[in-house]
Length: 509
Ligand code: UN1
Image (cartoon, rainbow, N blue to C red; front, side, top):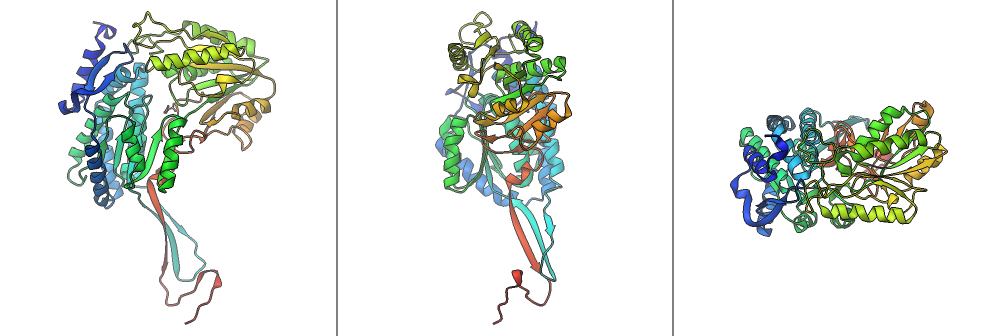
């Protein structure tokens, strides 16, 4: 039997069982878990009660006291075991991502690979949580900076990367000495339950050095996320989602001086300059704009094409939009799976109507109801030629819409690229060194990610991931992002017999 004819429900239940999700995770009157493949309810999962949430937080706070004393490289061993579990179950977990989030199989697997990569990174990091020795102005003194575990980390994730974003945070937090409590999107509880089951297997193999409550999971609605944001015992909240969500979370965290890592909306752009390799640009644009059905925060949403190559590029793009394979994401021939739900399709239709009303020419964008009926939200990606950057082009619509405009001068294009509220990711396609460097310079792209000759999406974990302005300013994953999960202490030691004061101050008693 071809995989596409397996019932979504049977497929999902079989994968959940293979991944070892316990029967206790399900309850008849629980939260419905749907698959966007057919829009149907697959099963219902047990929601975390307020009492259980309180117990998870209390346990994690207690776990911190023990975990912070376990040496970093030992903590790394737990993450190494987690990476092993992920490697062993990559196919099933990747398939579950496909079933629950609607990503095509290679992207579902890619997401699990991203988890494995961050585990590898964190294992190495667990031996490199290094501080500094700093020159001191006082004789017979030594000054240094050390990094200590911070406390319990709350992780709030979105449906579109239902497993990888948890792992970016959890792998680093664990090696940094912090317990983690996860509140996944209510649209993707199944992948969260599966990841939690794998993580608990790693904890069990690791043994008794891992305290009870080191990893918590809260299944349910946004009140559980609010709980994490408001609770004094949660030292850091890493939240991924909309800018609207970030606007609620940030002030509450600030009011109690808790740390925030915010990864919010993106309205990512690419500039295609006259010297660009158009074959390469075309492929990069197609993946960045249509891949994951336009539901990455790094998705390419705005394209500025130099007027001299507009007619060479845009007709080819239109052809790609017209012919791309849309359908069941389990079918290896499919490139575009469904949107997460019909609300997303409605939002897309509204944005396209708005664009039309202000002079945009829309190619594609229609709902494809014949693929799996009314409850599933398959759409043809939309390419929208805009006279200028106005209306919906200025904001993020979480759907596959690519707005295209012409430009004549690079400075003007960079200015337009930066003239939106979000600041996550950006690219330029050019073979002109001066243009590439201008784009990457201090007066170039204002985003957290700026690329040359690759699209804005699909970052690898070695770099710091995140963006500026309304994207929230947080950084996750690679580089020195780990420092957010630790507290810094500056230590000065006097090994002499006198007490010289800094800045030449004298104070004789
Ligand atoms: C997200 O959409 O929330 O760079 C994260 C990328 C992926 C991560 C996206 N590595 O597209």
